[in-house]
Length: 422
Image 1 (cartoon, helix red, strand yellow):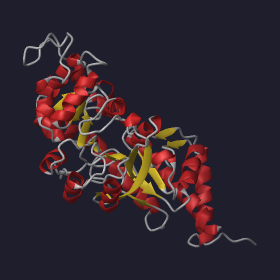
Image 2 (cartoon, rainbow, N blue to C red):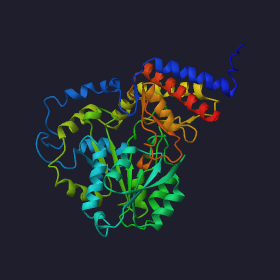
Image 3 (cartoon, rainbow, N blue to C red):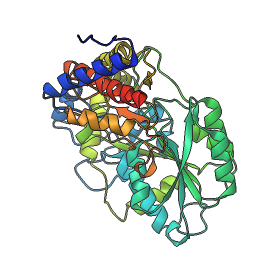
Image 4 (cartoon, rainbow, N blue to C red):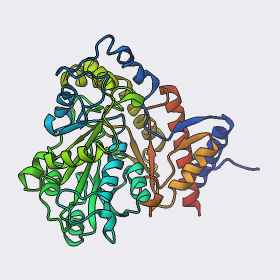
């Protein structure tokens, strides 16, 4: 006579996890949680944008947006986003639809031209390195790999990168030329940089005179709660600390309006803005000013941005709440996982026991749930502890998202209980 294992014993928990996984595979799912793309209903919020600018073809200053020129972008659009990105409008540049493209170009120009304060071009120097807070954004790391820039991981804390580590590395090593920062609702763990962290970044000693903070403020307006987080103004802090040229600020409307037809922004000191404009003039006669005028007419002002982002929040918040609810119901109290509860942005970070992330992602893929590869949140795709999994809740419909998170929890329980049984 055989008896069923006690469901609360290690053997019973593992047996149940295996049964649940077989049932999950049998569903034949096809779900994608890989990238933080806006969902179609989010894009529908800016449908009126596509009918603009109608018969209008002049900017506020009389510029004919159909023609060449206007390298710095429309002044009225820069005024709208000056407050959002904490950059004075005269020091803000409005460009094409991709802030990643601006980051790419800044690296290229630093390699091939002399940055303000630099002694030579980066390409002429023996080694170039960037600090990379981890977990972090895989596309930042991909840019470094593309250009042969060494990456030095720096641990993240609840207040931003570990500033003791950052200050030591920047002060001691002149080959450290930059640091990647997503300062608000960071990708992927939702951390917001504290005022103290911003102050230390602005004032710290740097062995490299051309050290730059790549301040990717991608989620500046992307709140998920009734209490939007505010961060300190790094550009002003750098100027106040005598390091006005230290920061490059990036942002875009890609997750505000239409990701395929957004506007990207670069902000910095007057010297850095002129440096970028001078280099950009060699590759473009001007940005898409018609699209910029569309955005001006659609968003109107900074209050218009905030109102639009409230409509975005109404669509996104239930998805993030569903992720938290399901993870808590399925994994809470198991000791198999922890996860973030971000107040904004586009991602949730799930941490599983050491050595388990890659296996969880592999099991999920076999069940038809595609996740960002384990390790993508670290330089060179190498998470040394193999623990971090990035969840992107935005794109699937709510029912599909709930199914995917429940399935992911099954995979975590299977891998975790199998690991305990070894």
